[in-house]
Each structure stands twice: as structure tokens, then as C-alpha cells.
Length: 260
Length: 67
View (cartoon, each protein chain N blue to C red):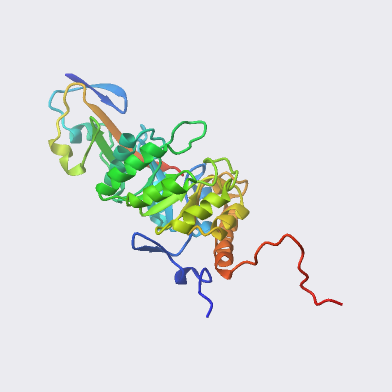
């Protein structure tokens, strides 16, 4: 009997902290300049969970994106993007919990604006504090297998290594590190950041990731709705391939037709 | 009158003003926002009783698009 991995979303749910999601593609809301384009892209992606950021309420107040997500019945994963220290990230997560009524948080602490790479020390410190405060922490991290393990030990519900820096579309620069992270993890591993096109998302799943989180690759594509559909198919295909048992790579050819 | 910082902007308000009063006056006492005063979250239930002191730093946040 073939395992039913990825043949049907409902038979192969992504389970995070006991919560089931049938889509293994998590599409964020960042980078879209138009809410109706975003709505069509989110629908095409099939995502059931999406990220939002916390920012100062401006003069106009109101947040059209929240109304949209509630109408679409997509769950919220607030992030701590823009935070530079554990203290800032912890306060932002607490504000998000108060504002949105969810204890789920995508923890990100950026070291600088040019690379937006995660600050490992501050991320781990914040993760420990947030777990202690009852949060379900999705930790955005570098593709460092040791740090991924430390974040899991700290109690993170999911660990989210980058493929390459946020918004670069450079894909997965160190596939072996992603495989090492997956091989030892007991919590879901979600490839987060760096996805450029569908093959990157498929590769993440082939490497054994449990899900893919992306925003810019879809929202900044020329046709976001079409790219969202491509990503959905890619995640599905990669998941199937991962569990189909690929052929080993060989140096020399091996004929598939009988000899003459 | 005392002066407080609201989202990094200086404002003059009456002494004894509560957070609830300030947010209502600013038109921000709606759902989907959260408030921190001097680096600590003030839950909605505590807005009516929380008075602002001279130099209080108030941050009012909401959710926006983000990855």
C-alpha cells in the first residue's frame, strides 16, 4: 500500500502544535500593492494560514488586510518582522496576541536591513521567552542545523530555515543543510524565505521540508494569481516526489531499453 | 497639562487622562489594535483604569501586510 502522502490534502495534513492544516503552502501577505490582487493570489495558493506584520496604527487607522483575511477565513500568523532584539520581538508578539487574539507567532529578529538575516542569539533568546509565555512559536532561522536543533529544544512548534535571504528569489543555496535540519527534526520544518519560482518550492519539499512559506515570489510576480497556482502545484509535486522514492543519482548512464 | 509620546509623536493631554480616553479621542479604540505603555502591553480591559503620566510612551499597533 502506497502511503497517501500528498495525493489529497485532507489525507496528508500538516500538523503544527496539534493543529491540522491541509495546505502545505503558507502564503504571506507581504509585498502586494493591491488587496484584490492579493485576494485572488491567496485563493489560488490554497493557503489556510498567512502572515501579517505589526506596525504603528497610522492616522487613517483600520487595516483592510485583516478584513480581507477574516472574510476569506484564513488564519493569522503575526510576525515580528523589523525587530532587532529579543526584547522588541517579545513585546511585538505580545501586542500581536492582544490585537489579534492568537498566540501563534512567526518569530523573526533581523540582524541588519541589507541582508535581513536572522540574528541567531536574539532569536533563540526570544524563542525561549515566548515559549515560556505560552506562545506557539514558528522560528525563522538561518539554514544552520545546530541552531535549528536549539530552537526545537527551546520548545518552538515549527522551525523555519531560510533558503536564501528574504525577497532575493535566490532559491535554496545550501540544500544539504536543509536536509540535515530535516533529518534530525521532530517538529515541522518550513522552508521560509528565498523562494523565487516553482522549482524552488518543489525542491524544498523534495528535501523533506514539511511546508513552504513564501510571499514575494507570488506577490511580486508579474501575474501573482498564476504564480500562486504554480507554487501550490509545486509544493504538491515535491511532496509526492519526496515520498515516491527517487532513483539514486548515477555518474554513468544506465539504459532503460533492453540491449539490442 | 502633561506631555506624552504617542507613536513617537508628542501630545499635550490633561492630567489624569486614561488610555481609554486617549484612544477614543484619537479614534483608535477599535478592534484589531493593541497598546503598549512604557514598553508593557496594556490589555483592553485595563484601558479605562490606566492613567497616563508625564512623559508616558504609548505605542498603538495594528496588523498590516507582511511576509
